[in-house]
Every structure is written in C-alpha cells, then in structure tokens.
Length: 287
Image (cartoon, rainbow, N blue to C red; front, top):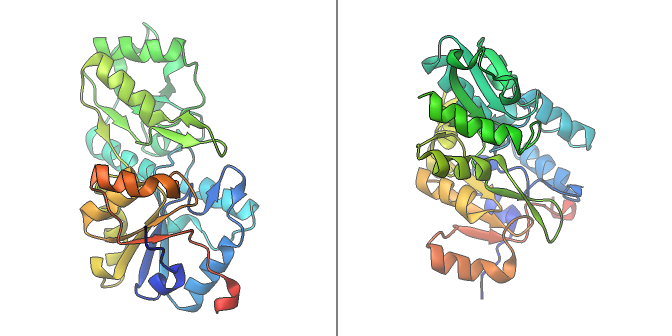
C-alpha cells in the first residue's frame, strides 16, 4: 500500500516549488479545481514557484496568457521555464546562419524566430532551399501534414548532416480520461530510429531543464537543491528528471500516473518519488 502524503505539509518544508504543467495544474478539462488555492498559499508563505514544462508549443508569454484566460493569474511568463527556451539557447550558440526548419505551429516557432535565424516550416522546404537548411527542430505535434511532412523530414535528414533538436521530449499526452495522443517527442523518436541518427533533446528527464531553472534562481538569491521540490505526474519525465538532478520529488495522481499502476511502475523502473499525493491542490480551509 502506497503512503499518501499531505501536499501542504510537503510545501511547508521547501523554499521553491517546481511544478509540471499538464497533469499537475491542468488536464484535458482545464484547470484542476481549486488549484488557485495552492498558489495563494505559496505566495502567502513567501515561497517561490516555477512551471518547468516540456511544452514548446507556445512562448512563455502565450503560455502564461492561457492560464490567465482560465482564471489562474499567479502564473506569469517569468515563472515559466520551457524546453523551448533551451532549444533557443542552443540555436543562439551553435547555428549562426541559414534556415532552421521546424515541425510545429507558427506559435511554437516563436523560440527559433526569436533567435534571429530564418525559419521555415518543413512543408516549405524544397529543392530550391534545402541546401541552406542548417538545423531542424521538433516543436509541436500540430501544424504540419503527418504524411507529407514526416516523409520530407526523413529525406531531408538523409541529405543534410544537420543538428536535430527535440524541444519537447514527451512521447504522448492524455486527451481524455482513457485516451492519449502522440506527442512530438514520440514522432521524433520514430524518425530518429528510421534515419539512425542521435537527436539533441531538451526537456525532462534531462537535467538541462532543471539546471536552467536552478541557475535562473541563483542569479538573484542563494539557494540549494535541498530547498527545492519538483511536483509532477509522470515517473519517466518529472520524477526521474528531478531525482537525477538531486531534487526531492512529489508524484501526483491527477495526470498520467494512475494510483492502481503506480506501485508496479515504481518497482519495475526503480523510479521512486520522495512523496506521493493525490494532487497539488491545497484545501483553502487549511490556511
């Protein structure tokens, strides 16, 4: 029998809380009911919080606005650390000219647009410009033709020895209580196997996401890893990533991981969170 902890009592032990987004703060129905109470409590206790997400579908400003539209105003763009930000940093350092091709929507292309490079969706790559393509980025599972453009990606990578960046490493995401959809990380993994190349990944469970957020905080205040806790709904990304970086972790049952399967998954994978909670919601009656 798994021990279920009280989320408020966990929060009280830490100075900074890292939250995953989908499955922790929101799901396919929208915001988790009363999740605003959690942020009201955290702010009342003068604690800090960041959303550490593999979502590269929109810019931090657009992601923040999506929470505001749902009624959660505590999340501002400066509180969001997304895998797209790391992809942008890589491009700034490593790719200086030419075209960056991408799979995703125009909104997701914000990250590479802001690097000052010429960007084009994969669908716009043809014989007239293929020789100028110097990088490819997987950003989102929407915004392209799954048949024509995925085949085009395979053939592009057969012709051009360019770096390939996967800005969202998630393989799938839930669309309702019983079904999932393939995420762009799953698409990238399939193509990686076909072309027999190693792609560059930014996103949980890799440590770069946590180091980026950690360094962000240390720019203006002293902090140790012991003072930070990571809250997530998925063992293979949130919990594994937090564990690898040396953070305490909280697994919540409001998203990908189902209570009935959690114990077996932990035993078979060896990925064990520090705490387990039903959700990240704090009852307003407790404060």
